[in-house]
Image (cartoon, rainbow, N blue to C red):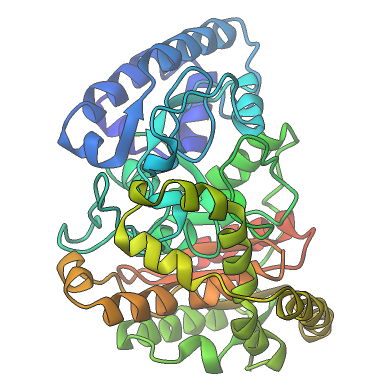
Length: 440
């Protein structure tokens, strides 16, 4: 095998390892050597070489005797620094956790390791994942794959870079309403946000009840296998969906407000290709989804409440930009918050009625393209507007609690998102694989 194995999809690497055609130890050494360079420092907060080598050697031993534990046994995975890893510094992108070394792995990492996943290291992220554009003045702001002057998107910025640069096979990161799906879209990756409750979150620095761990990879199949890995479950069957005759609801209206022309063009072309492949397309602007934009304060309020005491006790350990955004998320009364929760319950009920009879719902992942790092630093108002525009669509979808999958459209930095109801993770992955094939 050559260095091109760095860029193989995770699922393909798993098959090669199981067949004895790819040595997991040699693959890990290749990743570690590459990640030790400048690109690796931009993607990783720290590597975990001893752990990675030990886990790769154990995988090699198992596969030699046909005792592989999962489809991804021996495959190298990066983990966002919000996820506890035993004996390794875990700082969640913030000086509030400087030098924090957890005694045990987060539950998801523990289960992934038990199933043979190889933990290569911890990836860069924004401060507590609050910034969704990928900017972190405390450490590094990972560059976009298409242009180093552009941001990657984030919180899970380093994870996106780790996959696109061939520094690991798949990345696991916190999806908090755009923190993972936006960088996946802006770097032409597949990104998957499982439905709430699917992935265990013990040992993860989450900010609200709407957060979960998700995956960034090269193929839908990779994300499906990643889900099985962290929840210790069986592999989803991706063979059951057929685009011909699929009932697809395409959102319009507010999801395209202020959209970049490239987003409009790419979405139109992608929907056209799906229609040509035989999909039955319905276009709507449901009031239920539009209402979610007014309820995004729920997640922001919970984030403020979750970290308020720690920030108040250590105000000099956060950047001024973080503090401004953090304080803006506060100030919501208990009455307003509880009314918002009641409204969300009603919207979720309405949404079920809207999507009944459709296989999946489609919309642009982000209505914008990645802005330049310099432009964000120069203009605070532009920074805030870009935050809102980038995360508006998937941030609203996060409140529904169901799975969200973003796929590349073929146009740089434009992703197509598939939405499902809670409990429809396998269905969304299955139709995602079919749409992935139809889009080429």
